[in-house]
Image (cartoon, rainbow, N blue to C red; front, side):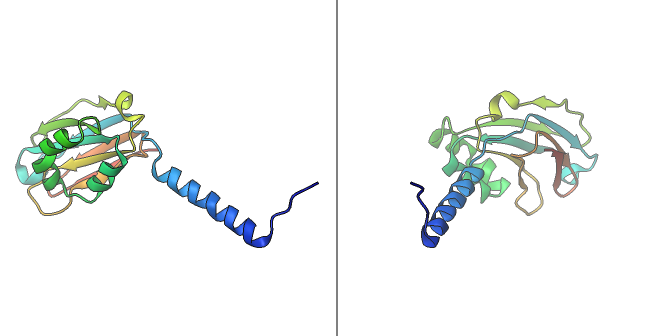
Length: 153
């Protein structure tokens, strides 16, 4: 005997399937493996700049960080270490304009992360934050008043 779904049951089943797909998509693991920094000669208005690449392993923390400007990240970073000791890992650079920085391999630590973010502590106003979770190879170009991210999926 074959069971048939009624139209309302079929619609409900498809809706549930769609909700499952959406929820799993939003928590897919990161693919970021390599980071390259390119620092312009006039980066950050000719001033040193601090930059963090952050792999986030806690989904609630990821939501918080996605709404946070870089300035807040850097001022609250120590508190995040205390509140989420295993919820994230950061790679930190403090660079000067024109500096050459070798490419960093971070793949071993991002595979189980729900998101990978870039925070740059610029002197100019703005969020100075980017999500790079889906990029396997990331290039961060630090420019005069902000940064640009490019990469390969």
